[in-house]
Length: 113
Image (tube, rainbow, N blue to C red):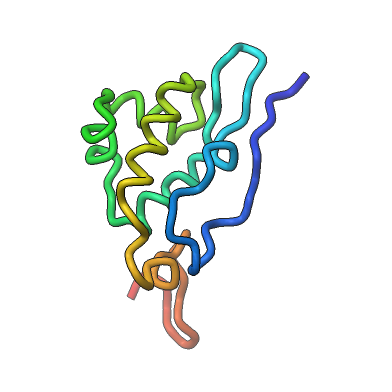
């Protein structure tokens, strides 16, 4: 059977806490959890956190967080550590409105300006 991941909407501007752990990960038959890397990156950005800072605060190797961001299997303990750090850092006011998932051009502008 194929691997599955959850695709849930991003954090709404009114949300102040971290996403539930279940919304970031899906269980795999091999016992590992796979995170939605795009969702996790978004959650880091709206909190003003870098991956290396989260790894440090979660007492994990930066490589472990890199694997989580890439969607590689991680342990439940690793997921809990990441969620704990996200819980400690609230979203920055207005960050959701400012953070773009991909570069966008303003009307009339040329990409690369």
